[in-house]
Amino acid sequence: MFKAVLLSAMIMSMASSAFALENDTRVFKIDPEIRAEKVHFHNRYGIDLTGDIYFPKGFDASKKYAGLAVAGPFGAVKEQVSGLYAQEMAKAGYVAVAFDPSFTGESGGAVRFIPSPEINTDDFSAAVDFLSVQDYIDPERIGAIGICGWGGIGLNAAAADTRIKAFVASTMYDMSRVSRNGYFDANDSADSRYAMKKAMNDQRTKDYKAGTNARAGGVVDPLPEDAPQFVKDYYAYYKTPRGYHARSVNSNEGWTVTGSLPMINMPMLTDVEEIRSAVMIVHGEKAHSRYMGEDTFKRLKGDNKKLVIVPSASHCDLYDNMEKIPFEEIRAFFAEYLK
Image (cartoon, rainbow, N blue to C red; front, side, top):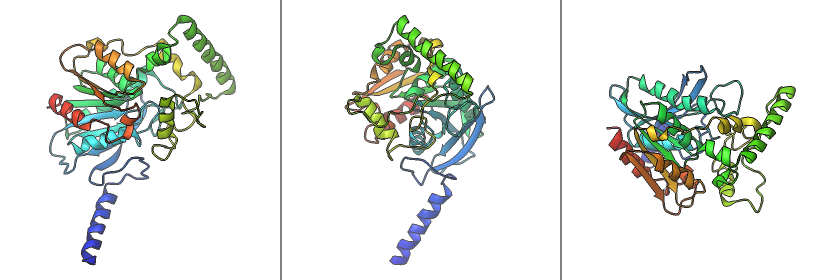
């Protein structure tokens, strides 16, 4: 009996180690039956991107699979939420690549921790480029998942990239809107935007003189007692063992102070109404970001759109709460539109 148990444990250990990533720093529960490998690809701007690609159990390279590109949240890395989503979709039979966007994580970009509406939108299409040329991927069955800020950025990509046949935005932010107008559009005025732009441009001068880019700080730490609940939720993920990662922008020093300038001046989602591919938007009932997803959903046309509101869920519940993330509905959506 003891020998049988020991042998079983050895087999499980061998299987787990065979599928383990080198220098594995993923923060979520790893499924030892799902193989993940490091991959590298580039966007149109010549920036090298790094991702973790997840393969279904029993993967057969001679077959054709549907592929998914996965990214988010805004300021997170592939070892956090996007990796969890990719792993779950691999369990459902998809080949899914979770990637670090330009300027963050293990991906390239000489200036670090700076967002770009155009380049980051192209990052999603670069992941589609990579998937579409793999022999084991059916290029007509490629979809994408964007979480939090990358829900909006991914939708921006879906508006331009007709190869994305189906897209899921989970707990999405419209980064242009929140950057321009503040939360709940509380600062939506020309005077408010002018003040923000003036402060950031003053910082540009200081950065140029210093030869560095000042950072804005990640999730607030220490946490003020009067912090809004959603800020407390961010802290509970990014600043604790639950989700902290050394490469995560949100877990550490944050984006550059001037990072919001392009988001204000070059808004995304201007062509959402022209998306013809299927779109599902998922939000928590109690999510502070819910209004951004619902307003975007209203702009979508056609009968191939779906809005899912998860009862009692907050914004960050859809990061890693396996009892809240509606993976069954997400799987059913892709099954219908990536046939």
